[in-house]
Image (cartoon, rainbow, N blue to C red; front, top):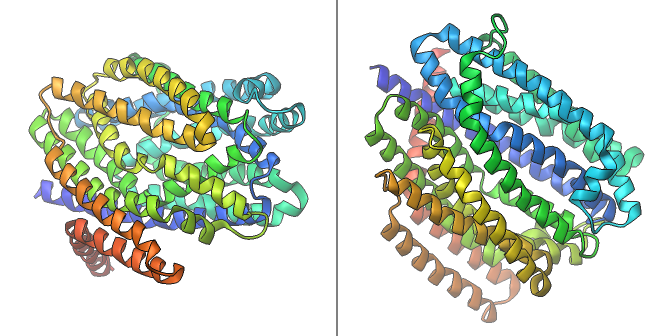
Length: 503
């Protein structure tokens, strides 16, 4: 009975977080449309995105490994004593708040040197503008860092509904700040929106997670030290992986204005499109961590296989649709106001380069989640030097013939190589979860359909081709994801009926 209850809560939680994340992504979609219309792909917007890069990079390094290790350690403690789990969560949050404040001080004190490192190709005017914006963003590490840890705690407790509510508030705040702030602050309104939106998110996260946190007791508990012990290799790998982002920005900063913001628009749109895939992988990590903490590796392997199959049933047709329809999609979404036809071409080229990430990320993430939950994090670190070297090599080779789109394609190639390595490491531990034959059949079928749609452009006028093409891809999606669609509808009905009955 208890297992059935857990299964229902996971299903309901997945639906809840999916609904709220879709709402948030839709609002994010509106935010990017407004941003594109107001600012296009200007050099000031390039500078704003560069100023945001060191903040996001450092926070990712500081929290990525710790959050990944937090799940198995927190679940182990909770199985034994829930109070110890609360003390552990509080101790970790207290320590990291101090670290985040120190990071903010560094950003405020040395903004010029940091921006110059991240964008050596920028002119003095752009560097100066970006450095000023980084000083304003120095408050963001304590805000976003705390938000990341509190969000991880909510997911560990399966508070997916509350987590979804908190995350969705960001764009509710950010959109009016950008729109009404643009006449007064220009592109800097994007920074003000980022700060204010995240303040509200962290407030809600703390409100929901407060019951699972205790700040009483000793500082630097043994489990907190253990967290850093296991997280350190992961943090090193994250920091080395972040070199890829830095190297990409260094290369792109040497290109004409608008290329940095083009990459930003394309990654944002890619994130919106792949929302359902990323949510499912994220929520399934909680269950995977629990199974491994219980020593149930057979069911953990089943969970990994189901996660990948479900993710790819959705990801493969989505990727094909993006590749064929990229330019029309970007034009429809962004091309208005300051966002010109040239901007559309820049963003669609970058989107094509990044498109393979939708398929590769679920496989790579599930492999990494297994290694992290099993505390075999040293292997994750070993993959990174290969990633850094190949990324710099591919950037150097591809940027000349393909400009910023080559840098985007380099990211996809690097993840492809890293995914193959991770799969072999997981296989070394006796876990084979990837249904390779099924995936190859899906890819061959999808490529054939995509080629037919693409070449039918020569036979149809633009409007007819767009209608026929999109109907074809929608049909392909329904065929491939029919099990997921039926299951989602069934779970949604159960969830809604349960909510009605409780009322």
